[in-house]
Amino acid sequence: MNNDHSQRGHATYSPSSLKALEICPLYQKDNDKAPHPITLRGTAMHEAIETGKVEGLDPYEIEMVKSCLDFQAEWSMDQTWANYPERKMATPGGQWGYCDNLFVRGREAVLLDWKFSTRVQTEVENNVAAQAYVWGVLNDFPDVMEVAVHYVYPRLDVISSRVFTRDDMEKIELRVETIIARAKLADPTKAMPTEENCLYCSAKAICPALHKLALPLAQEYKKEELTIIDEYHPSQISDPNVMAKAMAVATIMEEWAGSVKFHANQMRRETGQEIPGYTWTSRKGDAIVNSAALVKFTADEFGLTDEDMVSAMSLSVSKLAEKIGERAPTGKKKSQIEAFKNELIDSGAIELKPDTFFLRRERKTKY
Image (cartoon, rainbow, N blue to C red; front, side, top):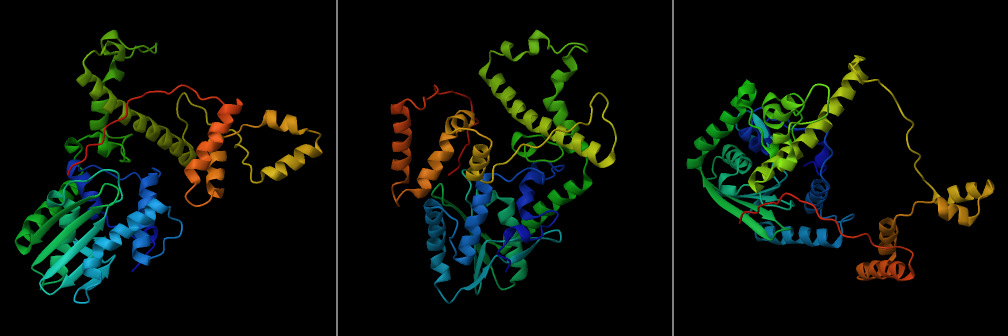
């Protein structure tokens, strides 16, 4: 068993990629995109469940890990069940994946999957990743007749479950192999842009279907001026439903623009080809302070006073608050931080800017 998730290999068409590929067979995971902080914390909690070591987790994360361990205790504490944590499972099409926890006893099996995300995925009944793992269990354990799958969402206090049988095997195999066959064909006419998929796809800069969806306004730009004809200008949109679609396109376009810049720089750096109209330039990297005390000592040596130092510094109240929270007694972190901020406000050291309001996409949760 490999407890370090970052060091494990991944199949070309692993169970976790099947949903995205079913939506769009041209989907390519963007490995250059930084992992989401929640994803990183989820990985840490997965490893804590496997190893029993909770160092580095905050109290709420430890509580979520404990809830998962409590849930699986029904099987893990019963010696009649054989336990296969993080088992590498064969899946249809010669692929594989790693299930979180598998218990087997005679003709029955139980698959547990820990989901630390902030929203519920496709329900287990129709979840293609869950089905791929079920096929793997039935394939690897010929005596097993049924597999109970439980997706556990500790953040949301939700459990999605379904029991599969051998009668489901052929249907699952057909679904997964069809997804893989469409992906291997890589027919550009079959691309299906969606906000959820496109944000995490590495093909944003070269996908004609996405460009057709997201870039029709580019055809209307005047060649010599940065203007858009009035009928397409956002200020002319009065229908909220149309504005909602425009917001979705805007989100994708932000990611697309970032992808274009990344690949353009990569092309220039690795091939040496000039990009017409753009000059390959550089700027010095910002200085990073490793020791504030040593910086102050050196500034003193050059004749700066404490008043000079304070006036030249850019203070971060949030970072100072974090330090105060780290040093606060157990259970008093929030109250100490609030007291610190209130003292700064009351003394006139800082003032609060007015609240800002913005639109954020809603996350729909299924129960």
